[in-house]
Each structure stands twice: as C-alpha cells, then as structure tokens.
Length: 433
Image 1 (spheres, helix red, strand yellow):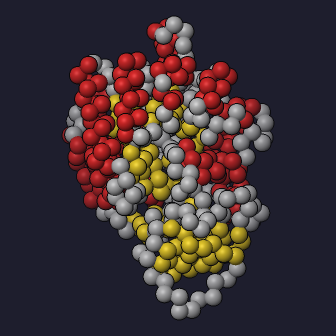
Image 2: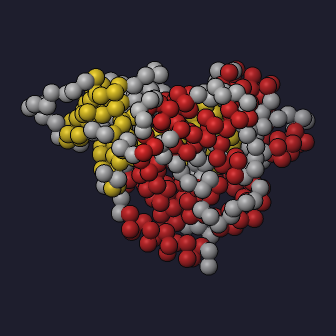
Image 3: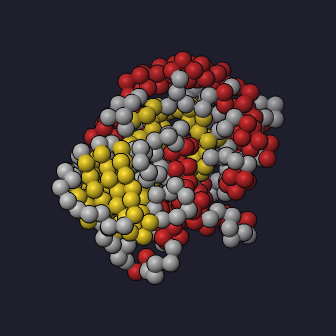
C-alpha cells in the first residue's frame, strides 16, 4: 500500500492508559511512522491512501492467542456437551473425515469472520496445516501456526513430529513475514511423556516456541495425577522440560498456587479463553491470581465449535466481567487490563511483543477502525471503557494488516465472501451427510 494517512480519528494507542481525542496516524510500508495529536495539515505529502476517520476510533488490531480456525465448520454441531464427550464423540469423528481442502475452506470462513471483527493476528493448532497457512497467505491476516502433534501410537507420534518439522521449515516467516511458526504438542493426555521429551528437543533444534493445552478440565488434571505419581499437568511439564522452551499454555483453568509459581518461574505465557471454558463447563481460570503473580495473559476465542463466535470484543468484555463476579471485586480486571490482554499482552503471549499490539512509531501497522457514531458509544465519557464494555465485532469498519488495507468500509478486499459461503456449504454437505 505504501504510505497511508489516517486522520481526524480518536486514537487509543494502548501504550498507556490514555487516548487521543482527535489525532492522526501515518503508516509507511509495514510499519507505523508517526502518531500525532490534533488536525493533520493535508498537503502534497505523497500518501498512497488517505482515510478520513471522522467519527471513527483507531486502535491496534486484536490478537487472538488460541484457536482452531477450521473448526468453524463444526459451529453449532456439538453444543451443550462436556469437553471429553464433545471431543471424542462429536468432533474427532467429523475431523477424521476431513481432507486438506476442507481445512482450507474452514480456515477461510474463520479468517473472514476474524478480519471483519478486527482480529489481525490469530493463533492456530490443527492438522492439514498447509491449508491454514495458505488461507493466511491468501487473506492478508497475520497468524502464529502449529501443526498439532499427538502420540496416540508410535506411528502417529512419528507422523506428527515429522509433520511439525516439515511445517515450520516450510512456513516460518512466510507470507511477507505474517506467518510465524511454533511447535504444537496438543496436550498431556494426547502426548505420552517420552514424546513430549522429543518435542522439547525438536523445539531446541529449530529455536521455536511451543504452544500446548494445559489443565483445561478437572478430569484432565486428576487423570494426569493418577498416571504421573501425583503430578499436575503443570508440574509434569516442568519435569519433562517443556518449560525450558518458550511456551504459551492454553486454558490453565485448574491450576494451583504451586502451579502458578512454576509458570512464573519459567515465564510461561497463558492464553485465557473465558467463553470457551464456560461453554464447555470446564470452569473459570484464576486469571486474577495469574496476573497478580506477574504472568502474561492474552485472550483467545478457541475454535468456533466451542464458543461459537470469534468476536474478540466479546472475549474482552467477558474477561473483564467474569472475574469481577467470581472474585466479588469490581476492579479485579479493569477495562484497560482487558484491552491490554486483547492487544499488546496478547502479542507478548505469542512472543511478538517487540512488533505488535500498540500504535506507536516502529510497531507493525496492524490497525483497526471502529464506527463510533452509534448509540452504544454515547456519551463520550471514556473510550477505553467503551471498548471493553460496549464495543463489538460489528463496529469494525476498516482493517489494516502489515500496512495493507484488507477491510474497507466493512468489505473484505482480499477474500470472496460469497464463494467462501458456497464452498463451506459444499464441504459440510459431505462431512455431515
């Protein structure tokens, strides 16, 4: 796109708890060049695109730290079930039927929803991951991707380990640098201990972080303790060396004070998924305890099969509200902390804190605009509170990723929306026949 000027906007940079009532933002290539206050004097500045943002709010793109994009194909199919039944009786049998093309179109559907809702970076762990990476490449979104690795059998362990290595080798830093790869051992209950030790070595060899599901349900924790001499999943990961590698752990719903101390010791980052955890009846993660311990928490939607949407504004609101009620403390998670968790803390949770999550000179140009000429943004008392408590995905009008305009006036410029719907209908007709 070259040089872009966004002017006459409310700007929430998420650098500190403040905002600019009227300002401008200049993008040069893939980076933010300048953020300024007041009116920008339009002249012969050689901008390739000028966006008049009067009545709009500019903020960093949202960062979704946990999900399974192609599971959008299972949205509404397996509701009102506990996690193990949901996975084993409903999701896995359908996933066994999937082919690479299905994962591509399921990912396209999820990315379409995310871009229209202001998510500019998402995290994914699945299989047939070339399809996910191709969808990222084609759509213009940013993503942190892992080939899901499991060890149900020696053959499956070998296959997913080799597949994980092949994937990171092929896709890390591709798509103009928008794709970052990690290794993705699924969970302790799908990965035997010896296999997890192998994953640690592979992570070291390729110098890439890990993402893993940990302590999502009480059943998982109890099973782990029974099979590992009383060790919780967090304690087991420490013993196996997982935390010797940079790690983002998804969920962490059932963690003890001792677990949290271990996570702090190794700077384990956390993907907090309040909506998904509630819907599956998994519980409520002790997010406030983790924050007080100094852990980094980002927010995630999980897949659309367990949410059932990918609205990060809803996740932000839930994170702020849920812990106030749980702890009977109205300041347990403030509006600004929820906003940080959805932006710069999410970037930090993905080990991208030097690049993403704020609007400041030098940051990557992932910027979204919201239409604030709507009843739920009035009166104008506090823009940060409005973002955490009032805003929603449908308020997003424009999205820039890596300096490229990908959504303009609510239309996704890089994707064929009607074709995606038609292909999803075709795929689902076969999968659910």
